[in-house]
Each structure stands twice: as C-alpha cells, then as structure tokens.
Length: 390
Ligand code: NAD
Ligand code: MG
Image (cartoon, protein in one colour):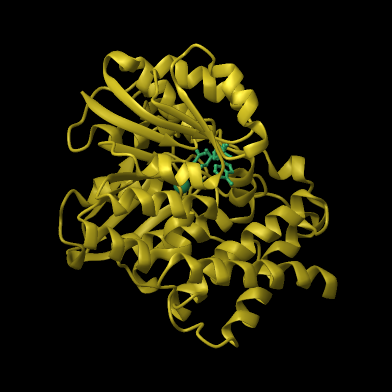
C-alpha cells in the first residue's frame, strides 16, 4: 500500500486531494502518514480520522488543545507549530503533496526533498522563492518533484518526456481574473471582495486575488523558469478567458502540443498522484461542441504590470525571486487589510525589487533557508514601507 502525506490539507487544493483520496478508497487504498493544516483544526481532525492518519499537525500552537480534543480516541497523534510541520514532512512517505500557501511551504518542502521523497508541488512559492536551491537539493538527494500547479502539470504532460532543448517556447494561459474587462480607471477602487471572485476556478482567497492582479501568473512564469529551465524568451503568457487550454508547448519544428481540460484541480493533483500511470479521475471530459469557441488575447501589461516584474526578476536572477515572492505576500496582506489599494500592489513589489537590488549579495541566489528568510524579511519591510511613501 502506498503511503502519502498532505501538507496544507485543509485548503482548497488540500480539499481536492482529500476528495480524490476518499473516492479512491481512503484508508483501504492509502496509508496516510501526516496531514497538516492551519486554524481549521476541526476539519483537519475530521480528515485525519477519515484517512486514519498517523499524525495531524496544525500550524498554530494555540490550537493544539482543540486539535487534541477533536482527535480524542482516534489514535491519531496531534502536534502543532511550524517545526512540527517540518518534522511531519520529514517522516517517510511515498508521495507528499505540498498545498501550503505562501513561503511557509518552503521548509516543509525541503524536508521532503532531503529524505529523497516524491514532492507533488502545488506550493509554487517554493520554486519562486528558492528555485535553484530547491532544484539542486532534489537532484542531490535523488528526490522527485511533480508539478501540481495546473499550467505546469499541463506543460509536463504536453512535453511527454521530450527533450526541453527541442522546445521553441512554452505558453501558459491566464483567465484574466476578476478584472479582465474592467475599465482601467476603475481598478483603483477595486475592493477585496471584488478581487476575490474568480470567473472559472474555485480557489483559496489569496491566489484568487493574485489571479486578478496577475501576480499568480507572474509567480507561475518564474515557477516554469525554475522547474523547466526555460529563459524569459521561451516563456509566454496568453489570456484565455475560458481556462480550457492550460498550457501549450511549441516545438522548434512548428508543432504545438496543448493540454486541455476542465478547470478542476483534481486533474493535476490526480495526475501527480497516479504518475506515471493514468488512472480514472472524477473529472468530466470536455465537451468542445458545447463550449463552442476558445478565445485568446495578448495580456495588457498596463493592466497587469506583475507580468513585467516577473520577467525582470528572472533576468535579474539572484535573490529576485525570493524578494518578489515576499514583497507580493506583504502587498497582498496590505491590500486585504485595507492599507493599500489594489493598484498599489505592483508598485510596492517593484519598490522592494529596486531597493534589494542595491544590497550586497543580491546577485547570489539564496544558498540556504536562512538566506531566503533574510531576503524575505528585507522584501516585506521594503514593500510595507512603500505605502508610507505613497
Ligand atoms: P488555501 O489558503 O486554501 O490553503 C492553504 C493551506 O495551507 C491550508 O491548509 C492552511 O491551513 C495552510 N496554511 C496556511 N498558512 C500556513 C502556514 N503559515 N504554515 C503552514 N500551513 C499553512 O490555499 P490554496 O488555494 O489551496 O493554495 C495552496 C497552494 O497551491 C498555493 O501555493 C497556491 O498558489 C497553489 N495552487 C492553488 C491552486 C488552487 O486551485 N487553489 C491551484 C494551483 C496552485
Ligand atoms: Mg496555476
């Protein structure tokens, strides 16, 4: 029986994974080692009971007693705190999904790689903040990373083992998010509630707002750069409002292979779970006649400056990914808290990139977790200060 762990089990991706695991037989088909979550300890305990996990971990120490109570009599171990999440990630499991949100996913992901495990990676921030470190660690420990972000799973599937050298370019699509058709001048007044509605995908709030600002796509461009080793000249973004084509690989012979599917994360999660086998998944096949047409447009970079920042961060290299990711997390926190406007997020991130580029050591990509955290702290402070200047 295969053993699995899910980090960030109570989130949007985690719930989709739980659904797949339960439909596939739950504890009769998988031996669950660890499940981790955040504040929603009641749901975490429910999942841990259903999958008969070895251990359930909440990120928040003040929730430990509540988690213990919810697990009473189940035989599931309870723990709390970020070190306990890392310890749970380090426990041997055949397959580990990282579906934590934000840079908090990096240390647990490294713990999976350090034990030579298979890391199914939804947490794109792991690669954005520390791509060279993460890829080198995986190689050194003989660990495998399987992409779960839908666009990267799509590239992985469309590549189908072909040599990346034969690829002319890769296109990842973007729905355009909540504000695709808004008049530009209205964006300054966009509220958190308006930014939290996605036209096609049902996701966590933070990534939904990042879709409206295109910071999600910016992170994904950097993620594709780190994972597939493609330079900016070979990475394209296309607005595709229907979210049916997730990515397309164009080879140097002019042929393109696209990956199509309904916007349902259970496809990408299930593909990584069953890889290299394709098993049946509870995802409906496409009905293209019912869809009628698929449309595409070049992204407008006046509307979505995040895409330019991603390209510039790739070109700058060094600590730019760690800075962009952390500055974006700070700017998003500030927007959600009402401290800055929607359109202030990109300038705040750009400000952090400019300030950090003047710092000693910026040209060197972070060599360890401490260096990632150092740049993350610097970037958050710089992004937060920008609002003071505004
Ligand atoms: P979410 O906010 O719904 O869930 C995040 C999970 O991480 C929860 O279990 C939460 O409790 C946990 N968590 C939050 N803060 C934590 C911390 N500091 N330490 C440990 N755990 C913490 O997020 P999501 O939308 O499921 O996204 C998860 C990851 O997957 C993100 O990196 C996102 O970019 C990526 N992703 C999501 C989707 C999607 O459809 N939601 C698609 C592609 C990629
Ligand atoms: Mg994606």
